[in-house]
Image 1 (cartoon, rainbow, N blue to C red):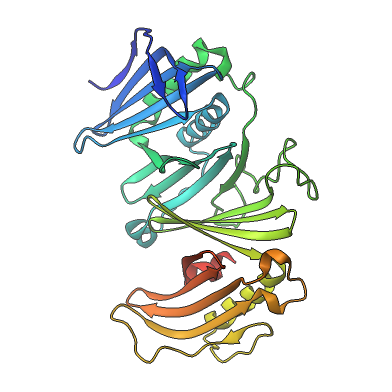
Image 2: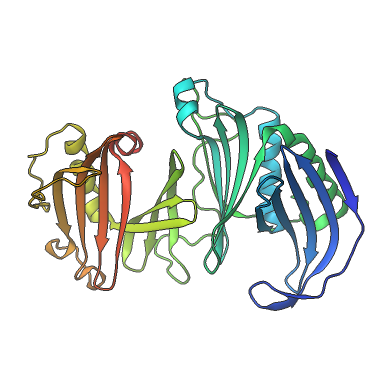
Length: 358
């Protein structure tokens, strides 16, 4: 049966979630729609109360679970309410909807050990809210809530907030979050979302390197089933751009020091204009492979070595980037690899989307 049901209060024994703790189950809500069951369990441990959200696909029996603190739950509830009231700008571009999930609005909440991503997304079948958890010690998990059940899901959350004051936005500790909304046809942001939020009051100011790096600004691009996060950050070595490519359970990260960003942008611009012979200071041209592979051809190859720049620090010694312009049946793309003494990481960008988001 579809709807929301309250279950009795029960207590659970000891379970292991980042260490052996006693987790007491205080209340459970149950919602079912779109051939999925959702279990919303309010729990409490030594740290405090939290929500355990579980999605069960009735066809595949696949189960996904995310743990939400009161502050994160407030963010989910706010975005859900805004989506129900249609405060986010949707798209009517049929070609775009047929080929991809389109991100309408996005918010990221950072905690000490994990990031929570809450995205309002749209495809040809309608809109959904996607909640993903990236933990430093666990695989990525995600929950998808289609617009067919938004009202029922919000009703369950409202019941929880009304019965547990800790989950009320007035009492919860504010989450460390950044948000981004899709622009409307005039290129202006929707009233509810506003521009990308800068660092909140609780974050470290530039030059304060006591704890982890400070996040100065952030941007997100969604291409098909992949998401790209561009975070401009600062630590004891200086300012840099962290680029993360996330697809399903895989995540690749590369970092560019601030002093090479303009060079990388100039290189991307030359590739976009098909000026493959453009000479850029600090960029070395590499020989192309003799033969193309079965899946792609290499049109240009460049290298940026950090040791050649006067701004090079001890951290940059032995670090360099290989940037290859390639082409396959889907179009042109960049393969950008960051090489260090101990490891290498690579991300792949569609040239069209990268030039659009730069």
